[in-house]
Amino acid sequence: EAQVTQNPRYLITVTGKKLTVTCSQNMNHEYMSWYRQDPGLGLRQIYYSMNVEVTDKGDVPEGYKVSRKEKRNFPLILESPSPNQTSLYFCASTPTRFGTEAFFGQGTRLTVV
Amino acid sequence: KNQVEQSPQSLIILEGKNCTLQCNYTVSPFSNLRWYKQDTGRGPVSLTIMTFSENTKSNGRYTATLDADTKQSSLHITASQLSDSASYICVVRALFMNYGGSQGNLIFGKGTKLSVKP
Image (cartoon, rainbow over all chains, first blue to last red; front, side):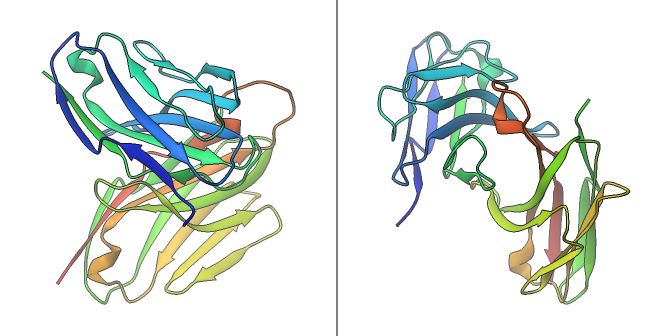
């Protein structure tokens, strides 16, 4: 089954403790991205990757890092999480950066206390 | 500035009733527009895509319209069901002209939260 898989689905952590949210897609898509979703603000792009070893900042990149060592995986790294990073995170992929449909993962609800 | 505005922000209707959600955009040049349905706590899923030449497209009880001249789209839900309770997100893709840029030029609306009550 074609899908985007995120882990974990839920995470509660403390301020400053490094964490990684994994994202994997099995559709051989080139383009992957991370979004955060907050009430009243909609989906905002954090980082995106157009292909292996090609990543760039989205609209709200501060406090986040990503890597794209393999085509299928696109982890999101929070080196020193802060409470303002409490949010619902989504990973998405499209066949290419011009793909018309984004396929989203199930989401990761992160709480930083 | 490329923007997508959705209205209303939230909507409550009774089961079996119809409703219409609105999406206005200022994205240019326009490529296509998608409506996504997002169940609470889950990722958005595409309902339908509208390209420049399409005026109306149906997907079951969902009918999307597009007026490219006025840059407006609507999503009409007929005979609503409890399972229609979700957020509906309008996403417009700009026709990408130059190399670089974020999102592959996807501009997201903030969504309309629909609640269908029994």
